Length: 371
Picture (cartoon, rainbow, N blue to C red):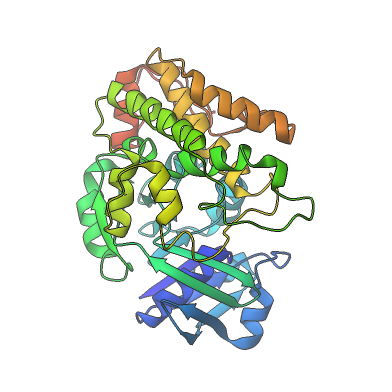
């Protein structure tokens, strides 16, 4: 099977190596100025892996040319930060063909971003889209061309547009995917059950004083947590559950999702942070407040949660407070520039129109045109 992987960071390298080992013919793409080691991988002809995969894995094709990336690929895996979805997808768009399937890992409402762009270009017919809740790996690629795969999750969740095709889509994708895939009812319910928006922003913000500025990295999960910070995460979890339940979606608590990923039950959020072997094997600490723990998960997860809450007349002060604090620290307006209702093409729609759109990928007659 021919597959393309867009992105050469931690997850892109892990996925490229793993799928290559599973017999796929992998094309790995990143732009020439990408810091993730695309040139080192091209020079070596593959990726040096350690941890769960301990081998040098050849990669069939490594390229910085977008034109050469998607030809004949059945699956296009997108493993880039969510703040780059629009710009990168616009580069891919001229080369995507009917019948190809776009799979986004650590999705952050990705398919709704893509659908708006596809509809604008009148290319939304025959393109399959799958959102996967998270990368299947806990991994780090801190040296060019080398990735350490600390753990592989047992089960991750996925949803599709149109929503009715999810079981057929996952049946085909499961032949090569590195862990079990669980079907969700639609991409909105999946997005409201993401957990990175709970973890990364809160711990980063409340450790802001010792992140970056040349200070030594600490163990983000074990050393960055206190019972009070764990309590904030629990409160955000309650707000997320409340918003999702107002739409009638099946919602899963943070600890339930962690148990599904790692097949281990923790009694509290605090215990998870202190004792998770996968998350405490390496420091896993961001080097600055402008890394993905903030600039991806606040605009890509918390903003849509808050915006969807407003649709249901829920004005979540805890979620809004974290968004505002992150924006103040980074001199950014995440509510304006993040994955708000306009960027998801859900603005000015009733709840019924939203549900029709996310389930069918079609705009109802009463809905506004694509921006």
